[in-house]
Amino acid sequence: MRRAPDLNCDMGESFGVYRYGADQAMMPLITSANVACGFHAGDPGVMRDTVALAKAHGVRVGAHVGLPDRPGFGRRYIETSPREVYELSLYQLGALDAFLRAEGMKLSHVKLHGALYMMTSEEAALADAFAEAVRAFDASLRVYALPGSHTAGSASRMGLDVVREYFADRPYPAGRVKMFGWTHDEIGSPPEIASRVAGMLADPRYAEIGTICVHSDTAGAPAIMRALRELLDRTFAEGGTAGTAPQTAEDRHSARDE
Image 1: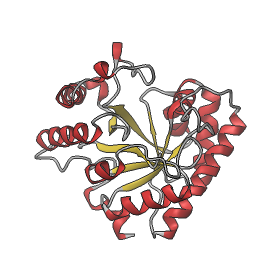
Image 2 (image 1 turned 180 degrees about the vertical axis):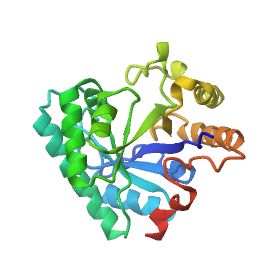
Image 3 (image 1 turned 45 degrees about the horizontal axis):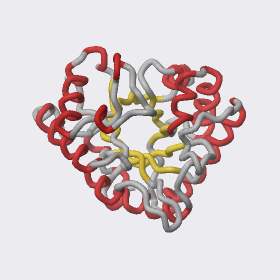
């Protein structure tokens, strides 16, 4: 029987006095937080606070690795070499890991952000460099990636555990995610999004999906995530609580206990 997918959210994307995203409202609703590591967004104080918030709610923490592009929020395609991808990935993994160690927690996974997420999905050399950095840092880390992407392929070839991702708050015209340039009408209301996710769960083409993302900066993100939790609780009522994948039920609250 298919397990309930993990629910993840990109977080820690504030900076200094600037607040960005509904982190406080989203954290109690999710099972995995992807925390910005100071390149596309975030700073040491925000990273520390976000890790502490995740610990308080028993939420797994992963590194949200992005391009060094604060003005563009990491969403601009910037020419980047494989060596640079390796180095910026390793650097950000180490930065977030320091805050987790201070809280007695362990890094759970890695998810690339914005343009870098798509660049590695589309370019094999960049995907290889990213996967090599993860393997060099900690080969036990899970890699969140698009199904069929170079990122997923490279990580799998290097022996890393890949968790394939579906974006609830992004449109999928012609079956392909539209990561940028979408409109709120294309995303739809929380009930419409829940209906789209229900269709995904019932579609054999998406059988490998292990995690579902709602971005903390999407308008109405908490309402969207609540609608998804209700959907998953109904769908998997006999097979476990919403958000149990990609770990066992016993592992769900390891972030609190470690």
